Image (cartoon, rainbow, N blue to C red; front, side, top):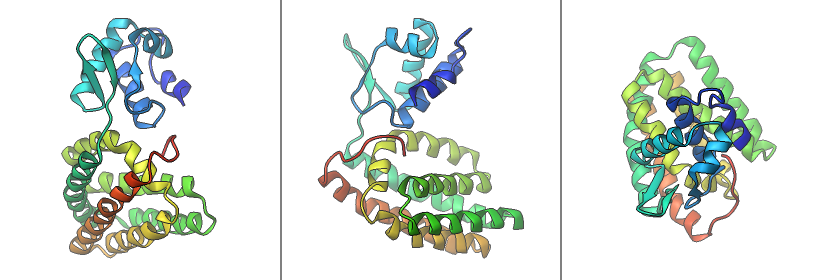
Length: 230
C-alpha cells in the first residue's frame, strides 16, 4: 500500500499538494499506525519529494489532526482515543444525517439504481462472509450519500474526520458479527433514499451512526485486533 501512496506524489517535482495527498492517503489507509514516527528523510525517499516539501506536508497534516508534532522529537501519526472517536462519530451523525436528507431530495432514478445495486452487493458480501468486500461497499455507500447531497462543506469536514477515525472504523468493521448488525441499518438508509423521504433518510443515517457509537467501547475493550486498510 505504501508503494501505491508513493506513486501519488510527483517524483520529478514532488509538488506540495501531491506530497500532502500521498502522506494523507497512507495514514488514512492504515499503512502508518497510530503513534508511528514520521521521519522526514524516510518520507522524502518514499514519496520522491524534497525534505522541505515533506516538512510542509506534515505541518498541514497536523492542522488536519492526522499528525502530531512534538517539539525536538519530530512528528508521529496522531492516535485517537476512544472518547475522541465517539465525539467524531457524534459529529458525523449530525452532518451525515443532514447529507442523507439532502441526498433523498436530490437523487435521480439512476442514482437510486446505483444505491439499490450497492445494497444488493452488501447482502451478497455478508452472505458469503466477505468482510473486506462489505467494508469497501460500506465506504462506497457513505461516499455516495455525501456526493448526492451536494453539501460540499459537510463533505470536506467529514472526509477529514474519517481520516482521523480510520483505525477505530476498521477495528469495528472487523468485529465478528458486525456486518450482520450494520447491514439492515444500511438497507434502511438505502430504502429511505430510494423513497425520496428526507426525514426517514436522516433518521436511518443517525440510527446507524448511533449504533456505531454504542459499539465503539466494546471494540476498545477487545484490544487492538487486526490491522490494515479498511
